[in-house]
Image (cartoon, rainbow, N blue to C red):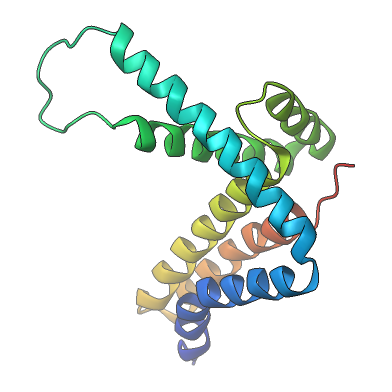
Length: 166
């Protein structure tokens, strides 16, 4: 019989453990973290300004049942989309994904660290979804199979988090 407690435990503790690791990085490399945060604030402000300009230029069309994202949300969606794109590409060709990160950073809308962070979050989110599914499976072999489905995404998250593009 497969014990689902470790799967459920990992699913519930992965996000707090990631935050703890980020806090540890903050403590170890505070100057580098502060510099990356400052860059992220500048690029975030630029994305918000661009999204606001697009809102002004675009004429409102038909009313949608779900409200369209505001400028802040659009900026966050753009960053998440870039992270998704890098995470997906990294699995197939890490060199090409690294080139994409550099290209996105060169455009000035993002910096490399925040794109890689978004890619890590995308990979971890996918792994957590697989683990959540495994935690709810009643069949032990299905539970084990779904746990294994999370592994490549956890490996990808580690690879992305440890990537050094310099």
